[in-house]
Image (cartoon, rainbow, N blue to C red; front, side):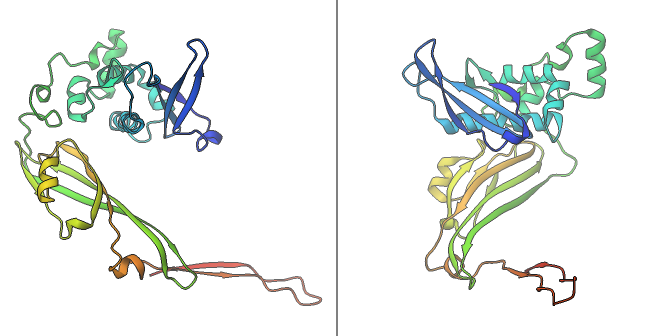
Length: 291
């Protein structure tokens, strides 16, 4: 992965997948790009005829994972200045996350055991020692030798609790009379786990048939979901995204073809033409009402 700054005027013009001719080898190299916090995360992928075909979504998701890891380590936004100030940590993270061009260790709990997040005291020790060895752990993370690399061993909390947030986005097209022409609902389940030991949790839905196009965190037992339509998982410690989904449209549902849970009623006014002999034409107004 190649990391570089992108000028803000070009921030929205970079394509997620680009083809770059390689004149030296008479072939084409695919560049996958992700734009986050003013930075362009680029990954060069060899053409299928020279190596195993790589799914573009795998590369794009991995680049997003790198950006999320930088936010975890350096705070938000993980912009150019944050990368410059913590360049040695970025280099060590990429060394652990990528092995010969393939994703290896991407779970935050395992990475924080391998590479310590930067602190003020750590930077002082690093400046005194003149190297970057102070950010590396000398012990192998305990999660890497188990069948649950996303969770540390021996986690304890004084209060056992987990918070679940469901975030949904509604995208729809309305006619002038307010009727729904088309609609799409996508959502994600965000969790904050503060549970001791190895908890085994089960998340159920009132109407699981409406949940479609799901993607899960590795902690979810996918076979169990395919069989029983329930989300069974052992959560990581700390914040994580449990799943993403889309809501399947039901033609018999009034919500899909009729009213929406929110209504936006715009009201736009135009200035009146000034009367003869006057100079004050009034002010334009634009009002909105959300119910």
